Length: 343
Figure 1 (cartoon, rainbow, N blue to C red):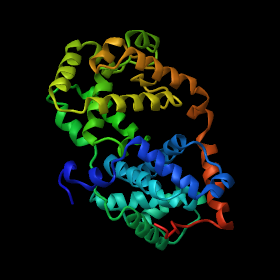
Figure 2: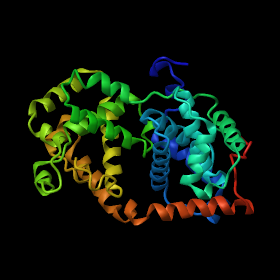
Figure 3: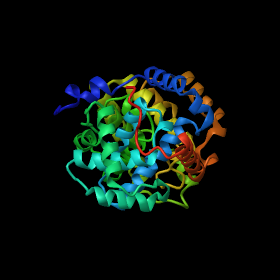
Figure 4: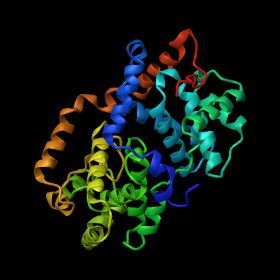
């Protein structure tokens, strides 16, 4: 059990490059091409968002704290880097991940309560035997080789925010952004401190512009936005700190682009008062990270061209229908737990 990230299995075994993740998923598709053809699912980004939303909903039913929920989200993401989703019951995997994460984070919940709440949330789960969660727990832990300790960005945020004079609202906004990163592959790609710094950067520097604030003035009076506008020195202080620190600036740049891609995908924060769904990026703020105008234009242009893939084009109900169809039809019966022993 590692007391810090640098000695942890998260760093040595569960951190990948984007190319490595793509290769693993391509290999999964090649090995399960028949299932891919028979049971089509929405694109992985949409599936990831749906699964994370479902985990959060289940956790709220049991008043689970955010950190155990974040751990459960990472467990599911790690599990599906090793196992093809179409060979599992995703609802059972999500339920088990929450149950295991609560134990690992030392806030255990009785297995009967977990099963009861999952059955109420997902009637299609179709499981009334706690032994199924026990079996899935064994396979979940086995698939992850018992490497269960997860380091999250929240600790870094809490450590750095006071020293950088971040307001309560900015810290809360940073935490919301960190919560959002679990909808992406970033937990498998970047160290937690990089995610924390990126979230702070987005909350303080890449805030909504004045024009956007005026456009949304009728719908919001966000203290976080007012604080950002009233504190121009805070931007300079943050960028100076980043320049003087040993933080991996290219990683922060890449993580920033991942967040922008996430918010472009379906306006996940539509209606949220901080306005991140409509954020515009001033050139001088890109210059703070030495991001070229050419790279910025090319990146945002490609995101806009991907408009038809927006999340609001495929509802959660439709995604759930895809999952249910796959779970109910594979092998003419529901797959109760991870049944593959090939790994």
